[in-house]
Each structure stands twice: as C-alpha cells, then as structure tokens.
Image (cartoon, rainbow, N blue to C red; front, side, top):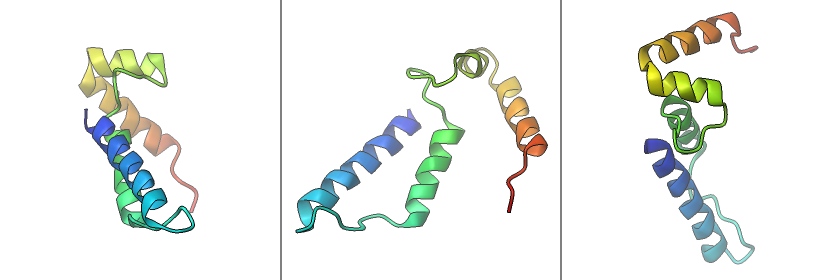
Length: 81
C-alpha cells in the first residue's frame, strides 16, 4: 500500500504544480522527495499491479526469498558510477 501512497502523493504534487504556477509548473517537491518516493516504490512493490509476474508471485509467496534475490541481483549488477 505504501507504493500507492507514494504514487498518490506524486500525482497530487503534479496537480498542485499545474494549478499554482502561471506557466503550469512549479517545483513543489525536492529531488530528495522524488528519490525517496522511488525508493519506497522499490521497497514495497504494489501486488495489485505487478510489472513482473514472476517477481510478484515470489513476493507474495515468500517475501524473505524475494528480498534475498533482490540483494543478490544488486550485488551482481552494481550501479556504474
């Protein structure tokens, strides 16, 4: 549910940008807030709307194994800096 909350907050901010700025946009949230929202979406996937069915089923059936595989993948494919 937290991912739905994050999406809702970002959608509300976008509406606020349009309404409150004469040119249709105003930076109402910080880059940090956006990144935290993305992190929240990654940490708590929305099981009602899965992007990847295999990951969805593993998340629902065995959350511990799901987290283990996510950590393994993050070690196998570190970010290029």
